[in-house]
Image (cartoon, rainbow, N blue to C red; front, side, top):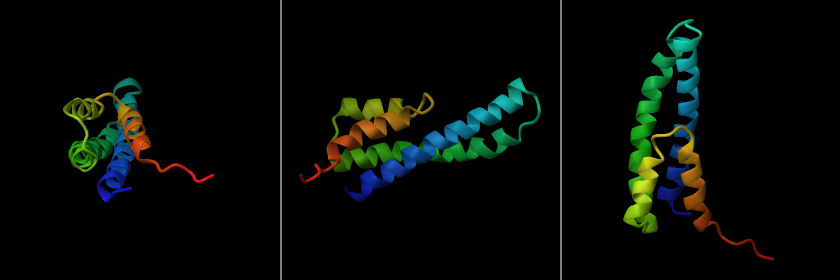
Length: 101
């Protein structure tokens, strides 16, 4: 697997994990009203990983030769929580090598 695709995979997984942390932080800030520490920690982390995910989509698209529609879908998957995982698995499944029988 090319390096750009491997890095894209790691960033997509990290972006989804940061979404989880941010959502938990938002629960404690807005629902449980017990403090905003989680949002203060995971907000900037998620922001940085979001930017890295966008760059990763563009780099992986260049390496793999994705169409514009696929690129737009990949970028759109950065917005709803955890859809970066779905997109990453869908796109990288095309690069898995078949297992020898």
